[in-house]
Length: 349
Image 1: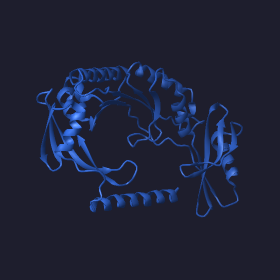
Image 2: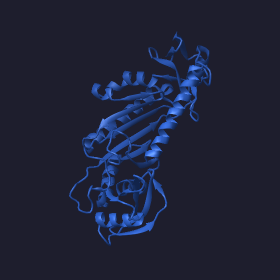
Image 3: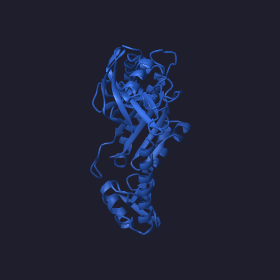
């Protein structure tokens, strides 16, 4: 594992150095943004002669739309990374969606709520904390009303844009992980250590195993395991060797694989909907599940409750020390809804 991390670190340093070297030498892909090239882009977006572009300085432009008097946004030239290669490329960003939400969002959201919103070129993400189902439904309703109003009042501005809402449940707890067992010396084989680990953690006769030759997170998977009281989910016993093989550490992937099993097999009622496992820094690793849906808010809160019921059927996900079941684990169930505004021809009514 340490060797893998070292390789990743060296690769990251190399790619970053290559990017900085090319940038300092002026070896940048693409062409720098100009008023003329920006006008061509705006013509494709909004239609010919339906906008005014004014250059502010070498890297900033002001764009105003004639069909929406008083509406201005800023375009900024940047140097970003090529999508497939670690090489610099000229790019640009704009604050169009931020300007639009600051103008219209106050009709639907409080000032404190709007401070949490995040903006990018062509998108805005709304964040709410989960408090209860009723509040979540109200937040989703306001979100949908806002999106519908934007699409009706500013169709040429929002076409092809994305508006996203995340209702996140915050929970306290430590990283969801299984126990660890330590062996010293070279007398214990990998399979013997793995079986002794399983007997100590889950009890003799409470599991079935098969040999494994896979690698998980840089560690060797010794056995694939199925618990007799949960035959639908399999996981792996991992072995990590240190000190030239004299120190062996065994653990398993029960929590991780159990969460991904739920995410893969939970039945959603409509297309473009799925369950994801949290893996971002805002949450305890493998500490929660998210209902992610596209283009519909229908019944998402109700299906959040069904997801909780589904998890309840897997007791080994509820306790850190399963099967002793004395250290309860709290899990987060959050929701993410994404709406895409349809593309339109420039100037289409």
